Amino acid sequence: MFRPHVVAGNWKMHKGVGEAESFVRQLEDRLEEPSRRDLIEEDLLEVVIYPTALCVHSCLISRSSDLIQVGAQNGHWEIKGAYTGEVSIGSFAEEGCGYILIGHSERRSLFGETDQDVRRKVEAVMGTGAKAMVCVGELLSEREEGRTFQVVGSQVRSAVNGLPEEFVSKRLTIAYEPVWAIGTGRTASASDAQEVCAHIRGILKEIFGPQVANGVRILYGGSVKRDNTFDILKEPDVDGLLVGGASLEVDSFLGIVDEAI
Ligand code: PEP
Image (cartoon, rainbow, N blue to C red; front, side):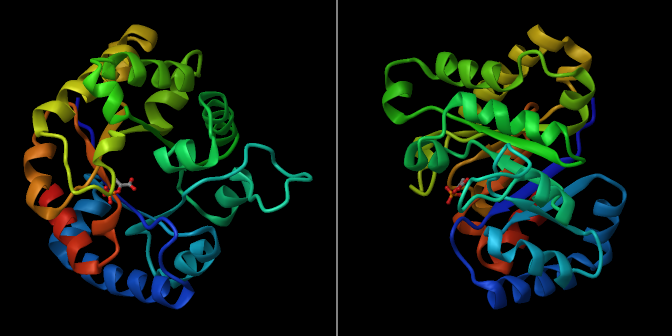
């Protein structure tokens, strides 16, 4: 089944409002070039950025088209309430965020986000029009102990078990990000990425059947650069990339977008 590629840039806690707006304008100008614009408009490729919560609104209003989608790096599952410092997933979606990133390894390791929290956030996205991009991935020690499939499998099952098929096939994206590859310069080999992404698709097949599972985009993330994009994306179960460091400069991000085409 054909699955349009997604290239998503996670800016983490980088870029203030001015910088974010200027990035969006520059990137959009370059995506307007027909070879890129046509692919996006024909739904063959999606380009997503995840700015900080503060910059979401300015990124959204700096665009003059939908060539770039803006997502939220995190959000709270409740619609509103006494949760000082939080922003709800519902309000990000209402603002115009097309994607909500959920369970990034930095959220899990630095802010104690659990599989249960991830599940609540996925369910909160279901109540909006946005798509969920759920991050999963093993620690280096877990890989060395031969537990990659077990760890990733249980993260995936807990996030998706029992979800409606319609949501899974149309609005769920999974990003496989081995924790040892994030921000380290150490990328998984294309075959390692394929092996785990295929395992994830296998779990989705087991739960939802092949038709639903074959519609879900599974991304790889972890020290992606232009140089390794092509090899990773030619793997059959890898449908896109979640990019951290290399998404911060327009040229390097666009280099990856171009390889994904
Ligand atoms: C990330 O933050 O999701 C990520 C993959 O970062 P990097 O590309 O810098 O490894």
